Length: 289
Ligand code: CAA
Image 1 (cartoon, rainbow, N blue to C red):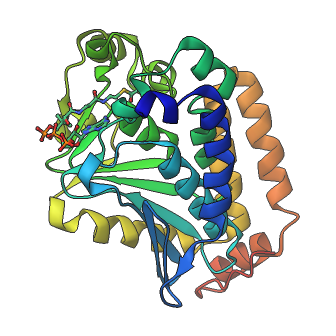
Image 2: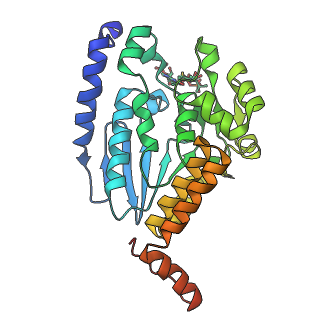
């Protein structure tokens, strides 16, 4: 049955019909929207997206990818939202790609459908995303956290790339983003042993920016997101873009890119407002123009 459900043609059809269903999310209240596997709440100018597939420890299947993409797209289009927090449950941010979904797939299934390519959509928006990681962030879960712009870890968080134990390797950026983030030796150790690291080690090696007690993690993440959202959205997007370019290019090209964006920021009203407010010793009022 599972094999039939996941046959190639069904996989393709499922991807598009799930995306369509996700776009038609049920509205629960003016500030909360629920998708089948994702919840979105607005906290003033911050969107909190919660992965909500608890029985499978938020493991990532096609429905969750479609829901997450629809949610991220919607909040990116919401002019009131300046930053996003992505979280899971206390037990699991996400315990990886859905192994039960993947088990029957053939090479042709994965290759022809571009399995997990769609997860990269999360990285395409201009608004910064903080991953608030409680519990397990394994395999695709760790990869999803690394697609975000900042990782905050709860003190019970566990990060790992255990794909080796399943006879495969990371398939959503783990070997690439982890290596860029923590260096070759640690990334190799994590990918080749499948061992998990805890929150403190994640902070020590630069994977997580901060560690907070589990109960405070989401509140602290929203606090930081609100601070980011209080700044000029154009300046925030330019900062995000410039830091991300550092991953893609040589130092000189990155420095030139940053300089062009820096000069371009002088074409915004927010630059006049921000610098003017400093000179006049008052709080700036950014208009995102
Ligand atoms: N896929 C599908 N189901 C999963 C899952 C996953 N990645 N992780 C957990 N689950 C399910 C379990 O099968 C179980 O379901 P049932 O109750 O129906 O049996 C339920 O979630 C609860 O899990 P456990 O009973 O295993 O919970 P635990 O506390 O004993 O262990 C865990 C937690 C250590 C995270 C363990 O579940 C585990 O090792 N999960 C798999 C982690 C993993 O290998 N992730 C990598 C996936 S491959 C990948 O991600 C590829 C890629 O790069 C894109």
